[in-house]
Image (cartoon, rainbow, N blue to C red; front, side, top):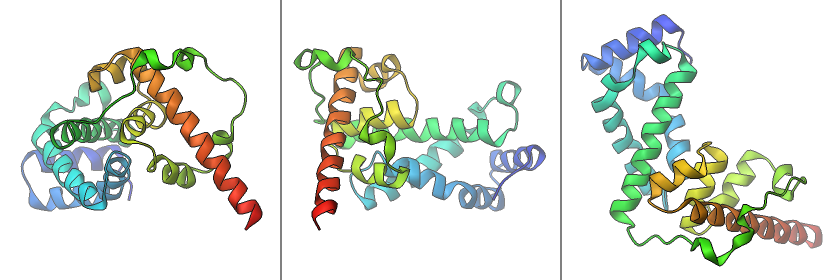
Amino acid sequence: MSYCNQELKDLLTGCRKNSRVHERLFFDWLKEFAANVCFRYASSKIEVQDLVCDGFVKVFKNLHLYNEDIYGYSEAAFKGWFKKVLINNCINYRNKFHPKLLFSDENVLLMADIEDESESVLDTIGYNELISLVMELPPGYRTVFNLFVIDGYTHEEIADILAISEGTSKSNLFKARHWLRNALQKKTIHKKYV
């Protein structure tokens, strides 16, 4: 389902007035989108459900913070704001329930500052296959990879969100990409001989 500007305005206005009908329409419209975002940050299907439910509660509580004067009633702009709320909720959830999630120290791998411009194996796979592999990453690598590659955050923003240094963010991204390349190569070799 897609909403034009006036329909989105009416939907948000209804939700702000606590209309259960509008809230249900809102939930039905964005539940799959929310599940896809939360899935990348969760460690289980049950956790995805918790993150989606908690995310919607946070969105409904903070809907007044969506500034139409700046963003308008564009579906793309609203989904961008919604996604940011979901991601922040996922990170807060992780910090609360998985506080010992470790990130590799930035000094362990100085190669993280080197960008490989050549086409890699990761550039040749589809989204679903990539997400499947990303879910196998160690949690720290997965979080940084999702934030940087999929959700478009900068290393500076990631460092701020996760309370780590920019160098640690870069190092974890480098290691995540390396891990994914190795996993994909193993998968490709296995397919070749099976």
